Image 1 (tube, rainbow, N blue to C red):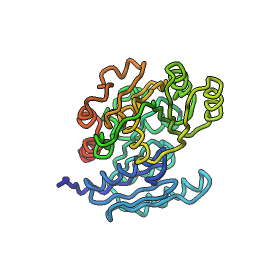
Image 2: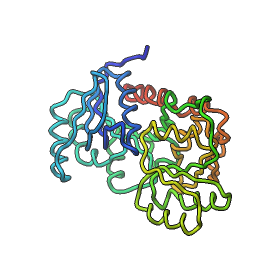
Image 3: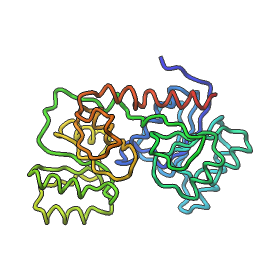
Length: 302
């Protein structure tokens, strides 16, 4: 049985929607937090399809403009009952309300995994008590408040399935943006004469479709996938092509390895991982959601 603290937690995040192709994973984070906290309040910009335990309450900010959302956030922050604030990936929440949370005597923490360092993040770093991140490359602003925690992959969900026969196609996963370098994935399969499936949506899709046509490469664009659909692709592919140039540990690599999918990458920072897909237990040990959330809760209660 999971150990439950008496902490009442307020989570601020972008979306609560388990079918969202980009943010659907965070639904499981909330579920895990609910196992270790007496009560969880969630404030988000958008709520869609969700089903959470009875000790979780979801509140969506309704206003369409930044000032209106900030006022709603402040109103909710004054009316809800909580001891600690956990902001997921959105320093904007901190810019709007950290002054109030500190006046109310709340402990405030930020989870952030991105190479971008802007003014909002610099302001947030000054006022939060703790900053949690996935790897040393995932938070680029020097701070003594940073704690490297691992990525939080749901290793109860992303698992191998020996009943599924792997195909011959390669897989590339991530937003269709320049930094993800799906173009390199397309070039690699064109040279190898292999089929490629690309999971994700973004502004680069038309360019990538044109490149695939120019090279006469066999490329199938899958669009945005739910977590279940993405797991199916990890289980069926021959290997994952990872060409991203974001410079940080990409969670799609860990999800693939958790499903036993080999990963082909030129990133030297990933050399310590079992890239042949033979050791999903490594991901469970070092990057599992089931270990991450209790560690965060423990850190927040100290």
